[in-house]
Image (cartoon, rainbow, N blue to C red; front, side, top):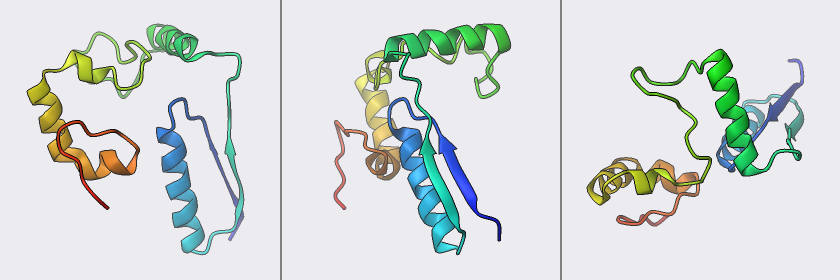
Length: 115
């Protein structure tokens, strides 16, 4: 088996956690991991990263954007989605996805889980 490299960029930490899981899974399956490398953009602040992504989306589109949505990259603030939704909507999301949200480091406001 050829050695593999896991290369990722993580602005808020979510992709880093996914890369760590990929690393663990590949290693458990017997893969030779050459390197797990985080690519950083130190010249971009969080705010500038969001503007940078907004510009790229405007110029080239964003394939994962749901239909009917004006733009995918909105504010660039972690967890800003909570302010855009009602407390009932936040609770519904947390109830449905608590385990995954906990695993990826989200703070659950309504329904906390224990591990």
